[in-house]
Amino acid sequence: MKRVLSLVIGAAIIIMALLACGESTSSNTGTAVTPAASTSTSKSNGATAPATQHFKVGQVVKVGNTWQVTVLGVKTSSGDEFNQPKAGDTFLLIDVSLKNLSSSEQSVSSVMNFTLRDSSGQQMDFTIVTSAPKTPDGKVEAGGQIRGTLAYEVPLSEHHYTLAFVSDLLESGQTIWDITI
Image (cartoon, rainbow, N blue to C red; front, side, top):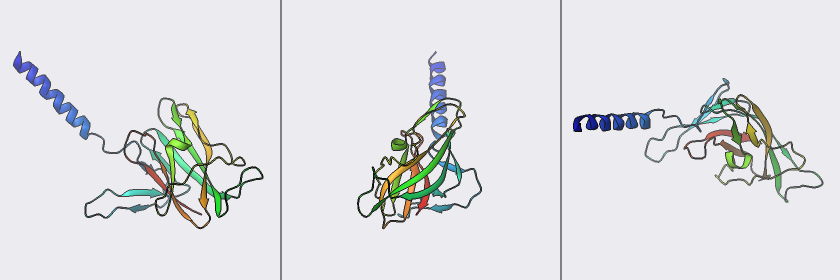
């Protein structure tokens, strides 16, 4: 009896170890679906770090097994009569489309799933621009799509940004697009 129990426990440990070492790709890491050129960067701190692939506006990117995300376009806006950026700033509007690749309903939040940073790493504040199209927020059925515009108030003096998408907030990794205005 002890021998059978030892074999069962040993098998369970081996199975858990194999599962832990299984898929090394995070559900947040994107891979290009379209053949557009992309760039890779890696951090240099003495240790070898995996390269983070950056994508370009217009590339279709598969993120894990859940989403296909496309940054369709980028433009700036000075707002309208009801909503204007403060002096020295502009609104950066990023048109995005997401397709649910999974077999179950998924939720997306423009505030929780997307982050915009300037070239120094400073995170930009998400904002609501009344003249912009709706944000990509809500539930998306299996196989369904959602499209919307992310809006950020950014300095007029800054021209290079990165937009990060995180599909699963509890997992590591992110998918990054280079944004230039």
